[in-house]
Image (cartoon, rainbow over all chains, first blue to last red; front, side):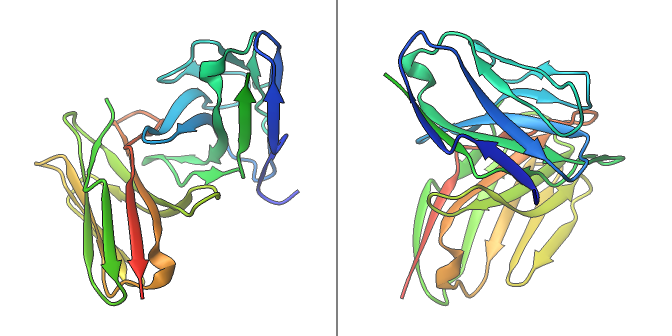
Length: 115
Length: 110
């Protein structure tokens, strides 16, 4: 593994189904993030984790949950998918320094379609 | 609150210059700039901290005006490889999260 990886690359999901998007980084970064990207809306933060064992809500957390059991992994779960969750999902990680949030490294993204 | 980027889109010919602006109504601690090519993940360009500093990266530079709560990205003598969508991300003091703007789509044509 080099950098940050996401799985699956893409997925078509029936509404009401449960889905977990996986994210793994090997850079030993403290912080990890989940964003969704929709056309014309930019990147919107769903959930974040400043360090292993802690998580927080971003701008659009409803319908999503996360966990951070260790430094490397940060899965995003959709408990019961709805069509409005159709989007491209990016996971990112960064170091945190005295100056606050550092450079964010993004994974390749997961394209999710909910029908 | 999401920062406001302007313009939303711009088309340039190779060799021309461009300025992309990012404004916030809230006090900012840092501004990040990222570029995303079609179908790819965003890639980091630079970070600016409050204090009005200016940074450069090849022919791409940026400034941060703390009083105006605004950052500007300057692309000089644009190349075809500069095409993509540029996003600014802002953070407040003590925060480790970024709020991104909606992006500016830059197209450089021969």
